[in-house]
Image (cartoon, rainbow, N blue to C red; front, top):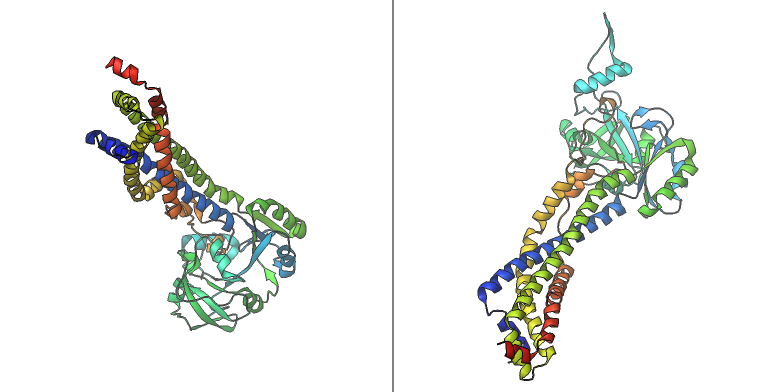
Length: 449
């Protein structure tokens, strides 16, 4: 009988013990696989955050935030110097404006001011003098319009991604009277794809209807920035620029270079702080997963070690007989390694299935623990009177949003790593028992018996 067949048969000598060992070992392997999947998924998400969001710089006119503050807007001439800086891979320019229904546009606002809007507008000086002083009055909400030169980048950087319910976006690099309209504003004004809306005393074609998941954004519309600059008589002016850097490692150097170019004209912020808010929980999950993976592998090796140690002690007489009839230490050791490998392979198959089944639930549990206290990325009113338009800021979509999109990634490499882990557990776990086999002396075994 060959070494392999003898080792496999020996694994089933005691069915109850074999079943118990395989079950306990399967749990250890399943946990190791879950932690390995978590490590890969988390690292992939960290790389994604750093490459697509964590490398952005927001450049705003000094003293201006949304429709608040005061000062002069930036110009395309200013920003051309920024776009040519080393390590700047892309730059998105935006220009926001507010339209007054009945004056600047025939559209009807889909938002009502409510107590918040009325109070802020009254405190800003739009109240009416009454007998006892200034009395609050209602007013009509303005309609926000934002011009962009690259909607794909703006979508990736905005707090909520734009999803088209119908139509599509026009070419934002061209000066054309076309727009995409928020679903609430479209519904309020019975707009559909192909409809015409009036703004700035001009006709604008509706190219698409979008849903941003946010009422304020859904009450606005977006156009090519060149068209907004022309229609609003703000040629060459920009209210915000999102600068993408080729690597997060170059973020600070590019920020310093922009500051040097623009001086006091601009307020410059990076996405580093918000990125850290997202990456830190991911790093926590990564650390937990790493140490749990190591612990699971050690536990599996210890289980096999104790099992094979017990087996060697039970079979000392058998080992002595085999050595007495000429079996070499290598052959006997190989037989026990095959036995250990048989137990580990069976446990590995069960553990792999269990690992794939429980990977996402366990990862979700880790996410829930790490995300507690994180923000969801959803906000209330922005600015006074609900102003601000579409904010294509360099921020991330909140800790909760990023973690909720985390899922275990299963691939062939994971199966390969799993098979390697099984082999390592079997070999390491049977190494010391194999050494003990070489110390067994046939004469001593026969004499003690």
